[in-house]
Image (cartoon, rainbow, N blue to C red; front, side):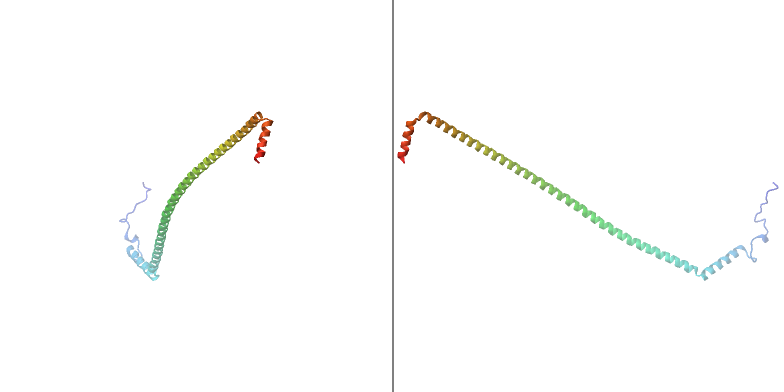
Length: 177
């Protein structure tokens, strides 16, 4: 261990080897340095510059806060406006639904009325067609009956009347004239 470095403590160092400048102690040197630094800062108006920079920063922050307040007020106004629009849209939608229901009911009633009227017209048309067919059938039966009666009377007349009866009938018609 002979190669190990020797460790010195502050008690082992003589006073002449300690830090000093122009025979002053270190705390005095630091105090003088601080006083010179403060003097230079005051001479160069550093505190005013710092205060001015802080004032500018405070003003910028105030502007940002004012802008944020304005934006918040605008956002609240927009929110209120859109809330009113949404409420109005919901009322409009409800009104549209009610109107659509009323129109659907009206269309349904009209369709029912139209179908009843159509059924009634078709019923009348069917009755008219049946009545016409009955009249035609009755007229057909009458004309056939008349034709049958005429044929039967011709036959009867042909069988019962002879030339003497015809001349007698002709004489009576001439006398009546």
